[in-house]
Image (cartoon, rainbow, N blue to C red; front, side, top):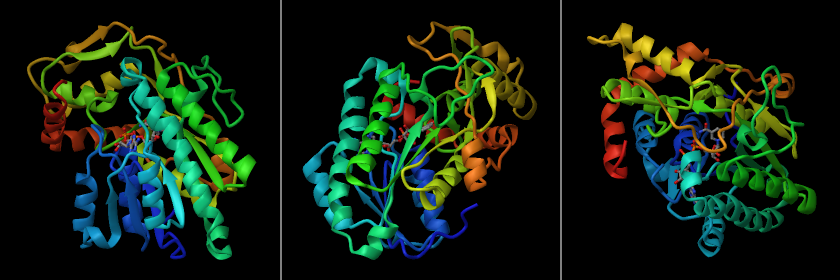
Length: 357
Ligand code: NAD
């Protein structure tokens, strides 16, 4: 477990730090390092800085001392070049991406722009920055790219994805993430740019936008609305608590070998219907009402190209970096449900802002 980040890293850049996983990473780094965290984020529909603001208050820090937001789009190369010159980073975590599969089906162009072109510009600009660092800073510099297991497509039951699995993306989202992984690897092979990559399974936890499966189920259940489940609810995901994912990212980035890819999963395979049932059963006990929450579950037309099953083999990261999830699925899920019960206003304001639920 990473409890203290070396103080050789004075200036850490995170892209997408106003998002769900990036926000968790920023909060961890505020706690476990003395570095200034530079957060490049375009502040799109998926962004929210409240979690970071709360953490700064908790730690008695002023925003400008330890967390600096740079509100730009990484697909604007001129603004990005200027920002990198000013930030002068010692270490980079790249999380900025359009991340919602359904949105990628409705409007794929922005996924190509942010996830492929944005990653390409970031690599170009940062590679020049890297070449100009002095030898000490160069030795310690790294670019960690956060990716998804969705790049591998679907897998049949019994089998698991590993670092050797062939790429087979099925949605515009996963195709754009696959392309970004290839670009990152090419920058290492071609220019000697020091990278690591993680391909992680589905995350959940506090501060995840309520248009994603687990928070949507919780929110709809509480609001007494239908709980929509695609197809017959049999699609299987390997769930990982966001705190555990961020621990894995820190371990890989700071301790993994340059050029390596690590698959990260929770070893928590559940169908979407099972997840919905767990949540309903928990609410039946801790927030009972006159009818069973399960009655709200409604099957809706399946998503096109919906991958049936994802599952991750964690062997490499657990052997090389001794990482394993700290939270059991059920504990993390209960903790997450309670967080949403206490933060329903936050969900409401998201839907008000984005005009649908
Ligand atoms: P998110 O949608 O919650 O946050 C993404 C953030 O990136 C947002 O704040 C958004 O404004 C920013 N962003 C997007 N495009 C940008 C651009 N062009 N320029 C600047 N900022 C931009 O996503 P998340 O769930 O936190 O995912 C973060 C990363 O982790 C993504 O790269 C995603 O592919 C990867 N990932 C997510 C999961 C998951 O289950 N959520 C699992 C594995 C990997």
